[in-house]
Amino acid sequence: MAEKTQRLEIVTPERKVYSGDVRFVVVPGVEGELGFLPDHAPLVSALKIGVMKVQEDGRTFKVAISGGFVEVRNSRVTVLARTAERDNEIDRERAEAAKARAEQRLAARTPDIDVVRAELALKRALARLKAIS
Ligand code: ATP
Image 1 (spheres, helix red, strand yellow):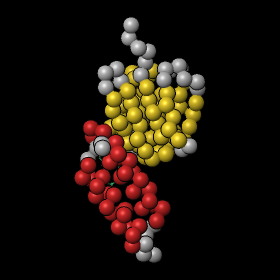
Image 2 (cartoon, protein in one colour):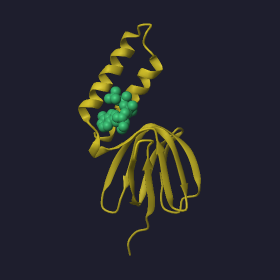
Image 3 (cartoon, rainbow, N blue to C red):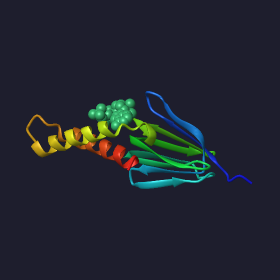
Image 4 (tube, rainbow, N blue to C red):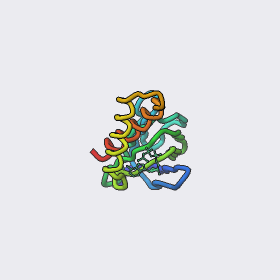
């Protein structure tokens, strides 16, 4: 018999990134990683910038997200993210360039630098690179 699955939807304001039946999902919760198997208890949690792991029937893939929310109920996992990219759509050069830019800004720390903004940009770039590492 096929193993039990749950529905996963990953949505951003721009697009539906993923919709499918999966066995297991791990998301970057603000207080640590959260893993969901089918029939998980209902839950809502905020998500930080990080990497999701998705286990489909025969394969596993990763998704970089830049914060948002997850809702779980009735074997449905819905991720609403600010941005989300599957590993196979991440542009490595773009993420490397964003990382270098943010690191330069943080190293310079001139008065015109928005430190929090640069730190967030760095985290997004690192999450994208981790998703494809
Ligand atoms: P950059 O400075 O390269 O734009 P960013 O972190 O500021 O990076 P975001 O504002 O998080 O970019 O995302 C803007 C849009 O570009 C989103 O649709 C996001 O999915 C996409 N995106 C950002 N970086 C990448 C990447 N390395 N590969 C693929 N898509 C990306």
